[in-house]
Structure formats: C-alpha cells, structure tokens
Length: 164
Image 1 (spheres, rainbow, N blue to C red):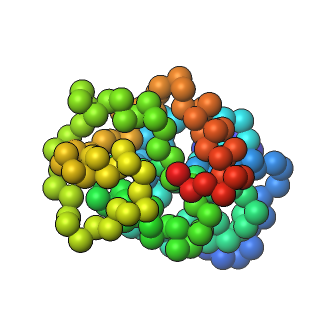
Image 2: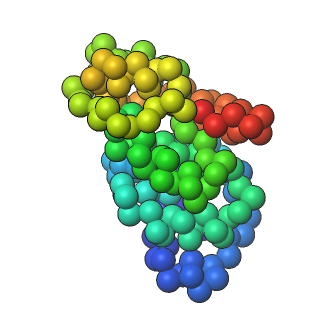
C-alpha cells in the first residue's frame, strides 16, 4: 500500500508486520507538517501528536533495526518531546537542518525557555535560540526543496553515531 494510512495501536499490539523496504522512519510532531511533508523514497512518516507517544513507541517496536529521525518544533516542548522519544529509541536522530536556522531573524517567534531545561546536549543553534528567546515552527520548512536531501544526510550521519 502506498499513501496515507491510519494504523491503530491495537494493530501494532496484535503483531502487525510491515512488508517491503522501509529505509527510515520520520517522526513528525505537528499534523500540518506531517500532512505537507514529502519524504524521500522508502521513508515511513509517523505523526507524533506532542506527548501522545504510546502508539509511536509500539510502531518503533515493530521496526527495531530501522533508523529513526525526529522532526519537531525548535522550542522547549519540542526539546522535551525529542528527549522523551529518545528514551524509547536511544539512537533517535534529531532533524535540525542548517538551513532552518537561517530563518531565525525572519520567522523566529518569541518564547520563554525555562532555565531548568538542560540543553548541554543540544547543538549550538538550539542553545542560541534559547538564549535569544526564540523558537521555530517546523511548518516553516516542510515545503523547502532541500528537505529530502537533508533527511538523507541525517540518516547517513546516523550511521556514524552522531545524534544531531
């Protein structure tokens, strides 16, 4: 089957088996971005509605050897959700393409980043956003023609052990 399909949690718990080649899984935080994003061939997109991660956890259990990339907003909750998902998938790659950060001065929105949110692990651009009190919506880049190549690069980097 090609195209959009809804998979209920019970199907995953009942032993749903995926057939064919799945090169990577992309977890997408926001519904609008998930609907508009065109993945590279062989990629499976899964909508992760914020903190509602139980079903996605079961999905990842069905695909244990597949690289997993998370694409969420660059904001405090986006960071927390990514860290939460990484507990379930320790090799989770955080999708933060360089060109996204080029939009900071044009598309950056005001946000208060909590002082107790530990960003020591985060790339410099995320720490800079926190210091500047900015955040970025993922919807701003989903139609960018550089996305497929950036996703492919994320998986290639994942093989090297990098997590960002």
